[in-house]
Amino acid sequence: MAAQPARRLQPKIPTPASMPLRGRISDLPSISVIIPCLNEEGVVDGLIDDLLDNDYPHFEIIVCDSGSSDGTAAVVTERAQTDPRLRLVTAPKRGVSLARNTGASAAQGDYFVFLDADARVPHDYLEVAMTEIRQRVLAVATFYMRAGNDDRLCRLIVKAFNHWISILQYIKPTAPGASGFWVRRDLHAKTGGYDETLNFAEDLKYLAHCSRFGKFGVLRKQRAIINMRRFEQDGRIKTGLEWLFGGMTHTIGLRLRRTPFKYRFGHYSAVGTGKGRNI
Image (tube, rainbow, N blue to C red):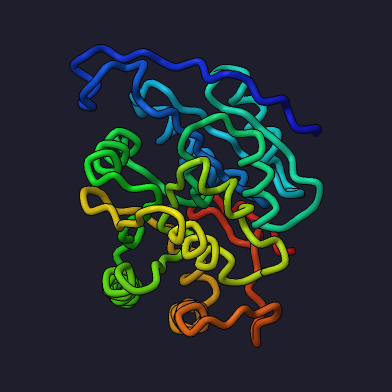
């Protein structure tokens, strides 16, 4: 399916009681939520539901399909027919960085929000985040993470990475893409977007690059709920060490074209549905 042309956002205007942000609605920045997808049928639906439940007045959701072999594109296309805030675009080939950049090229918002397809967000996610971003005058932001399950080891690993994120935000901004990135539109353009030559830790490089040109901060009033399926299916220790490897190489400034392990995408099952394909 060819990428649909970008169009002006058609905001949903909430009642004053549902809009905690101060100021005229017309003055609020617009937001483009960009979600790269590879075989996420039965998974991305939950994130779409969460976002469409937000009352922020000016936002769009752009799902970029990266060559899925399941019904991801069909599901998003069907949903988009009932809500103009949702659009599907298609990347010319597989690659998470290419998918994010393709989605950004179709986006119309003042801020880009990059979320993984398996993330979950609360109904006030956009409002609360934008309020804090404006109060702190941030151009780039991310969240601390919260594990999406009750596994003790998973929660311990996530807690350790939250400490890492907290310490390094003042030295070299670091956070995994799973926590979600908010980036002002002009900074994305200035940096050229995600490095499509990298297949690991490209999110860390992007965040650090954008932070050179605008104020960065870790948002405090909400946490990103991350799906732990990679930990559950690939192994908790293994995945934790892979994340640590990415964080360490990024911190010391290494740019790896290859890694000593295969960091796969698009092969995970949707929890409770059996969806997902091995590629």
